[in-house]
Length: 195
Image 1 (tube, rainbow, N blue to C red):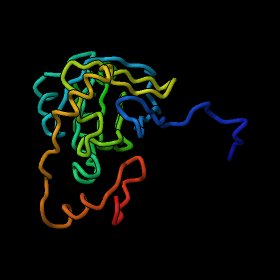
Image 2 (cartoon, one colour):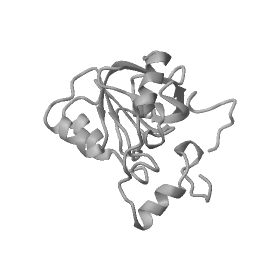
Image 3 (cartoon, rainbow, N blue to C red):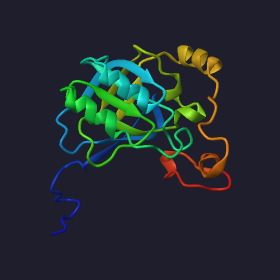
Image 4 (cartoon, rainbow, N blue to C red):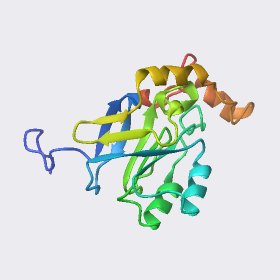
């Protein structure tokens, strides 16, 4: 049965596009099966998924944290690696409803919890996620479709001046070419001659 827009089965879809100071071009959160609609917490920042997984495994993530995994986007990964290992570890430790996670990478359909992916612009191109520091406050609200980094614009400008692009994970081969040609997740992470 296909229902009309005027008579939907649910008032909202199973995914929400968020925008705000942390993701000016947008981010995606899966809301199916998630009871929480708002979360504000302190950032714990990791520049690779493996580093975040290690921290979770060592019990270094606590209730109220927002786990930020960056440099995993289309260019930074490259290829938007899936963050399932870290989300599964968080849920396995009983933190699935007590923390949030934000990444410029992606999630699978099996991901559970308050997890935001596809943050754009990504860290590798200097998006705001590249400027997040440990203990910064992050607010995620699926009712208002907002994801904000609670840091002043003056402070963000200072951080922008100090930021530099990291070395690519691949300097030759197919993945290096892909990273050069791929565009923003906000536009489908497609490859073009002029990303």
